[in-house]
Every structure is written in C-alpha cells, then in structure tokens.
Image (cartoon, rainbow, N blue to C red; front, side, top):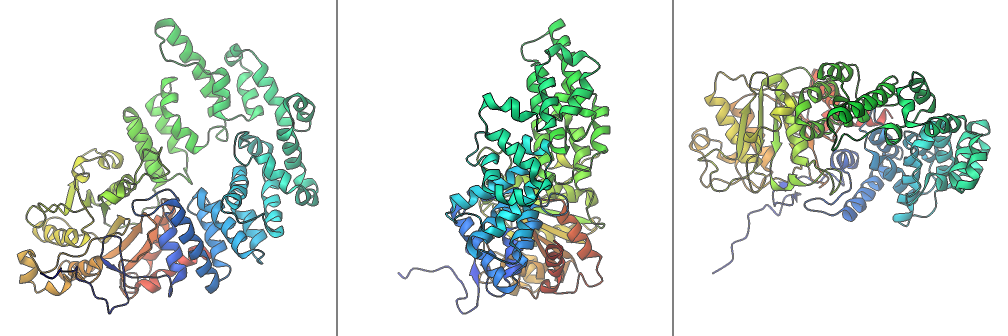
Length: 582
C-alpha cells in the first residue's frame, strides 16, 4: 500500500512553519520587514524548535541582508531595540546587534555613532559588547567602535559606573575601560571620570584608598558604610544615603534586618529599622528606579508601607522601559499585593489604542518556552495571556487557542473564550484557568472559525474592531474539508479550508466574509522566521517584542485613514518608519 503524504502545494513559492503549515518567506524580498517581525522578540535563549546558537546565526544573516538593502537600517534597528524609553528595551539585542555589525562589516560610516548610542544606556552594555565579540570570535572592536565605546563610557556618571562594575564578570567594566584608554584620553575632560573609575576598579584593595580620593562619590560611600548600623535611626541617615547614591542592594545589605524567624519585640524592632532604610531610599527615585520599586513592593509592605501608599507611589511612576509581563510576574509572585501591581500594570500599558479589542493568546505547547532563560518563571504563553488580558480592558473578553484533537469542532476546544468578572483586574484575568486549558498544537484556523461561530451565536456581544494574535506563529495546517462544521459548508466557505494554504490567511477571509471588517495585529513572540499572511492582505499589521511601545505603533496605524484597507506591505511602513527615527 502506497504511503500517503501530507498535502502541500509544491508549485507555490511558500515556506513551511515548524508544524507543517504553509507560510510566506520574507527574507529575500522584504529583508527589513523580516528583521523587524522575526527578531523583534528574540532573546537568544533556547526555543521550542531552535537553539540559541542557531538563532544568533540567523540573526547575523538577517542583519546582513538588511544592510545590503539599506546600510544604515540595521544600526537603527539596534538602537531601536535597546532604547528603554522610546524603543523596545531589549538589552541582549542592544549589545549583540552592534557587535555583529562591527565584527562582520568592520568599519562603516555609522559604527561610531550607533555604538555610542546602543551602549550609552548602561555601563555593563559596554562590557557585554566586548564579550559578544569574544564569544563569537569576531575579533577586537574596530577603531570606530572603540571611539563609540569611549563616548558611551564618557556619558556615565560615577554612580552608574560603580553600580555596574561587577568584579566577577567574564569581561569586567575595568577591562572594557582599559581597552579604550587612548580613546577616552582623546576626549579630554569628558573621558577623565571613566579613566579614574577604571583605575580604581582595576587596583588591588590595598591601593584603592588613595585612588578613591579622585572619585568624590566614594568618599561619601565610605562614610555611610563605616558608620554603625544604628546610624539608620539618625536624622542624618537620609541625607547620607542620598549623597552616597548607593543601590538599594548595598544599603539593605549594610543596614537592613531579615524578618525571618523573628516575632514580638524583635520583629517590631527589625521592621522599624527596615522602615528607616526604605524611607531613605524612597526620598529620591534615582535610588529606587521603577524596576527596583516593583521588585521591592513586598519588602516595602513588610516595612510598614500600606497598600494605599504603595498604589500612590506606583501611580506617580511612568515605568518606561518596564515590560508588561514583568509586572505580571511580580503579581504572580506576591498575590496579596496584586492590586498594587494592577496599578503599575495600567501605567505600563496606558498606550493602548482606543477601540474595542479582542486578544487571542496562543496556548500551545511551543509557547511554554521560558522568557529570559531557564531560571525565569515567565513563559511566552504568560506574555501572550498578559497582553490578551490587557485587551480585555476594552471588551471584557479574552481568548486563547491551541489544539485538542479529541474535542475539536464538536466540543469547541480549539478556542476558549472567557469573560472578566466585575471587579476583576487584568492581571487576575491573565491567570483565569479557562484561558490556560488546552493541549497539542496551534490550530489557529479552527480557532478563528470557532470564534466566527461564537460571535454569530452571541448577537448581544459587539464584535471587536481589532483582533490581536499573540503567538510564535508556528501554526498547524487547516484540517481541510474533512469533518468541517456544518455552517461552513452551508455558507459555501469550504474553499477557505485548504490544508495546503496558510491557515490564518484563510481563517481571516472566513471571518471577514461572515462577521465583517476587522483590523488584525499579528504580534510575534518568537523568532522562527515565517509570515502567516501575504503582503497583499488588507487591514493587517505585523509587530513583535515585549514592550508597551508597540501599542503606540499600533495606535498610529489604526488612527490612519487607510488602516483597514491598505495592504500589509503599506501598513508595515509604520514599523519601519519607527525604526528609521533612531
């Protein structure tokens, strides 16, 4: 008996997802779009289908293809990825992309300026840049890159240089400073502080006292750290902490008291001491930045700050550069303070475009990949559900999709729809069990057909103006005409159920034919390289990443007069123009 192969259209210029569905390959014809859509979410950890080394190689190739079309664009992309306020705040790409470009292209007219820009956010980015060059055997930084490194280092103050000077790193900050000593000297007074800090960090302990005199901040820190621990109760403590500009880890390590195992008077005394420490840190936001504040909400509450006080504090912050799922992670870790994290979450995502939105989170097995590495507690699925919960702020609804081969079509288990309860916040809704059930693969075609059926049978529910798909885009093929729902055949829509065609492309055609016009956002949460719809598809925007600024990009697109009618190729100008603004 002949073996029956999986149906596919070999005569069409298609690629395949890792699950065998037809998709579009943007690498040759649209290298700029391919770079932004495929790698905007890349964190270069082992994925479900690929490993870190393969991702880095594919990223290098994508940068090269983009450079061949527009020599400046990959540098702009690197700056966009790194910028925590206007861009995506992706630290690994912010140092890796310039390292790859410098190592593979060598000298370019853009190297110095963009290396300075990409590495000018945190001093340890400079050390990471050098480490990437070493690990990938790309050689020493070029002369232009060294000048850029020096300019980045010259832009930091003593607090920043000392904060990120980790003595056990593979490439220490003092090593990076030593590498560009001539370039720092050429900058004159602008580079003098970095050189002084570099000499201090590189010196043995016995020689540091003399060198500390050249860095005034070190004298203030010596005063703080040589005082007795009872100093925390004195009035001068707050001003001394501010003058020393220490990190919260440093001051807690010296003056904080663990509450573990204490009760009664000992517990009250420890809390009083810790309250004094936190009071000193809260005086100046620079001592407890946004991310540090989120990480220490439980400690602040234990020290006596009320929930109302915490909500008031987070409501005054902008949380620029904080990814929405990082707030979600905090809420999962500290459930009693969820209302505080809800307030912070709403600050990070206040860029949500107007309109009625419905998020569809990919809940398939490939989305269980951890975001940020093996020690992270967050997965791509958590990110998808977090963003889906955000969309529920406008519609009260959220949905997830995967593939339950035992109940699909009859049980409606390709798609799960949940409605927010009265008083339920978005972070609580993101943990709704109804959205987290499912198994198998990513049957997006069946899920959208079930969504169409659900909307047509729930007439009291107003259809969304915009559908958001949060996924790694590794869809399974459509099931074909076999066992289709009766209503699909009755509506004459079998032609949109071809297993050899891209499943989401066909599903959107069914949705628009039955429900009506809808804008669609395809938000890629992985780096696998295929586009699920053709560039001719109207009313679609493809984005990627973990940042809240992407919401602003979508908002600008939807505010345009032709958002719903222009083809995808034209809509992507909103993303490419954002990159080119860097």
